[in-house]
Image (cartoon, rainbow, N blue to C red; front, side, top):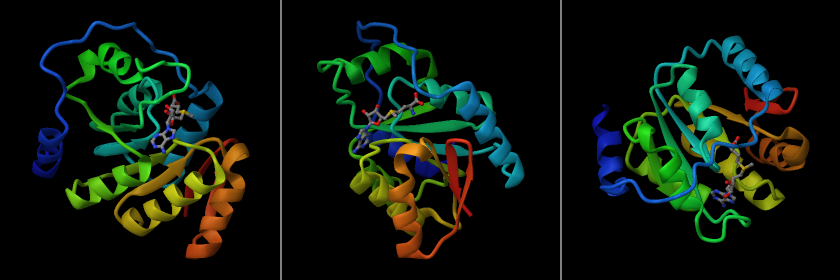
Length: 189
Ligand SMILES: C[S@@+](CC[C@H](N)C(=O)[O-])C[C@H]1O[C@@H](n2cnc3c(N)ncnc32)[C@H](O)[C@@H]1O
């Protein structure tokens, strides 16, 4: 495993023992989204071989999809304050993804802090996947910061175009980048 990734993992270790919890494997990555993202990766000549930084991992459904594409490691960021989870979000994520603990690094913080942290540790990232808060301010800030910190180092792709279009367009105009869109998935060109 990359040295910088190991250092990050030391800073945010998994617990020693699997917590009690509820198996939760649902998520919002759909068949259409999987197909669109697969196409986008192919069109952009991204051969999965490295780490994905996922902003907004929920219970890990999309993170497990990235692994199945043969990316080697997923940095799983979330605030873990999902409104229907009543304080059990992180516990259930850990419980449900215990078998993935060597492949998942958990980064429990706001998405913009996660971007800054991964850059500060200089972890090499192949893909940044933006799927956290879809409110205009957060989606715009996530995209702008991802562009500023990772463009040229990582491929930047996101979900839920229909909800975040205005925010992504604003970030694109502000920073001067082009956006590609297939179905509900988008990427920075
Ligand atoms: C659309 S869901 C993610 C779905 C997941 N990627 C999937 O496909 O199964 C959005 C997630 O973003 C998280 N979230 C909301 N605001 C956040 C923030 N500011 N920073 C990090 N995560 C956030 C929520 O807790 C939620 O789990």
